Length: 159
Image 1 (cartoon, rainbow, N blue to C red):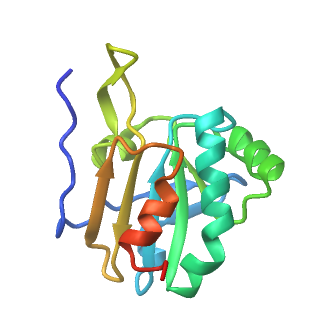
Image 2 (image 1 turned 90 degrees about the vertical axis):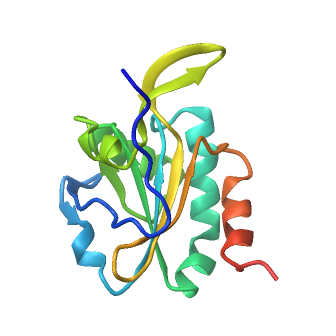
């Protein structure tokens, strides 16, 4: 398996409709007119993913005040996402992509290096989309710890 094709600045964000933690369908097109931060994580309730989700939770008010909607995306099934959301008191949508088709369309599923070995899986990534659904930032292989703070700086929200 070759590395996935990556999105770049100016690319149209791949469209999707996916179930959230409650099984309700959320279409990316329903967010047109708003900026979106879509972050991809490998598995709910694991240490790194919990750290990252809680960082987004704790920064949500300032991101929303700047006009950003936050969405989390993983291959977890809705029931696992609901348990994760409730346990961590997350107040933004978590989307389920067990087929990994949407993850792959964003270049966030494929070969990656893990502890020196090549494996196939979810590539922790973050995408910032503008009001028209165009990619404004695409960051691959991000670290769970400190990523939200860096994203906030990059978006000019700290200062």
